[in-house]
Length: 169
Figure (tube, rainbow, N blue to C red):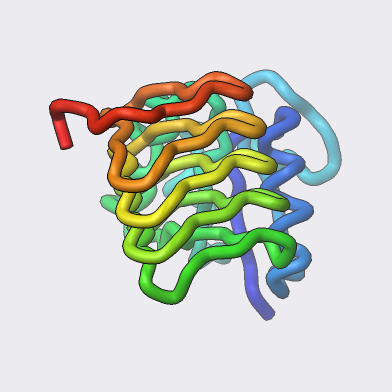
């Protein structure tokens, strides 16, 4: 049985939970410092004690926090999978590092590259040969045009079009 521990039981955490279920995860639980409920096992600080879960995902909308927790999980020996919703399209030649989330209707075209912990939100479009820095968030309906770049931990707001190459690329 596939098991996943999700850090963060807010709205993004529940989106990750639903995506993970569609990908075959059956045993899913949360850690959160504020939320409570039957699926919340405790606070974030207890993550290393959750040994029954081999995989974990940091479901935080804050880019730096998501990247920070991804590193903490990796150091503790958790697998930090990239989760691709079945209604998304990722080209076979695109390269996504660990801990990315690709949500429904997101498109990532040929030769695109994404660093770890990138969030491709619903309907975002990443054209061929684009480079997305680690921890970035492409919001709903944002577009990164061919060959363009997004710097690490940047947030591309909903509907924004990145149409020039970023100097950090």
